Amino acid sequence: MGLHVLEHLQMAIATLRTNKMRSGLTMLGIIIGNASVIAMVGLGQGAQKLAAEEFESLGSNVLFIIPGSRAAQRTTIDLPKTLVWEDAKAIAEQVPNVAGVAPQINGRGNVRFRGVNKESLIVGVTPEFPDVREFILGRGRFVVEDDLKRNKRIAVVGSEIVEEMFQNVDPVGQKIRVRNISFDIVGVMEEKGASLGTNLDNAVYIPLTTMANQVVGRTSPFGTEVTFISVSGEREDRVRAMTFQIENLLRLRHQIVDEDDFSVQSQQDLLAVANTITGALTTMLAAIAGISLLVGGIGIMNIMLVSVTERTSEIGLRKALGATQEDVLFQFLIESVILAAIGGAFGTSLGLGGIILTNTFTPLAAPISANTILIAVGVSGGIGLFFGVFPARQAARLDPIVALRSE
Image (cartoon, rainbow, N blue to C red; front, side, top):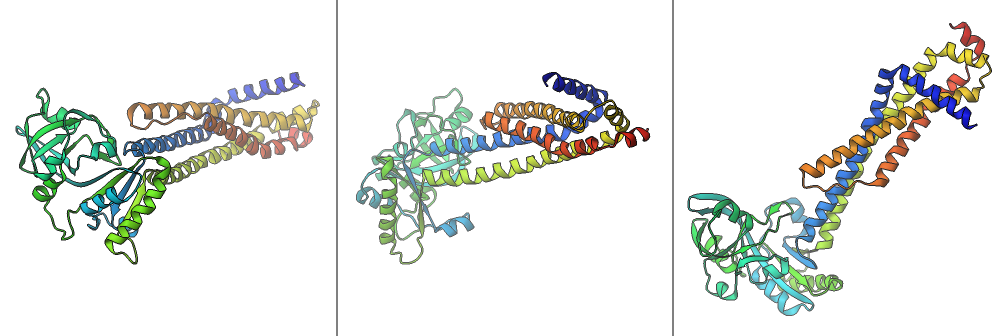
């Protein structure tokens, strides 16, 4: 039996070698399909991993209180000003299991040092900001309570600003102009990277009171408006309880009887949303790429049907010399499976090469999944077998006398 199979295999390889161009074009659909599936799944998993890393950089056990209802957040970019500094103070004083509360005011503006200009993120913060958001001070000091009380014009700058604007000059002790207002630099933050599309190293951190009173101005009669409030918990298992208590407290403070004018989102909530989106995109891309495998299988069937027509006399001669229907069927099935298997191998190599290039030249760290490779190669082999059955049966059913007369 083993020798019989080996003979069929040798004959199939010899036949395919005879028509190298046609065999190569037949495998092209399988190659593209395999490469696309492996690359798309890898890119999707890399996107999920990148999203997880970005959300982890926001800080552990952190809740984000964002102004505006959830409906408003989905339909507008300019969110309503419904959160104030006094809300943050109330949360710190009245909600148990809170480790720290960090309100902040975000803005953008021109930053200048000795004729060098840069558009940067400007953030008004309180002393709790680094601990809540897990930022690390590189040197100097951060904002302290006295800075808030006196509306001091002091600034802590991000690492990218130091690299691009100060070069060989120590920034601590220098003056920098933020929106044409002079600030004394008292500290430098360590590199943090980007988070949710925002480069946190290209930022200037100033006292929240200074930001409100001298940079953006105060417009709310209810207190100092803030962009959002970050709240860190003492324990991860108490985050859900903290969310419930914060929501109830803010409803009481804002006298809400209908729809909330804020939303509380945890790090896990944001990550779950991101994973849902990236997972759906990965599935969609893999499905689209899988169509190439289907097209490749149809191509194999088409070429094998043409091959049956061309080799009618050969089939008749083999059957006249004693070959059975099973022999002819097996012969054509082996040829189609070989085409699919070789195409799958080339496609796998191409897909892996795409992932390696992606990891080299982009921030994505796309993993190489052994399961995805096995599934893709297995599916391509199965497609070759499935789409090879019909032409193989057509060949096996040929009447040897009719086949020989066709010559």
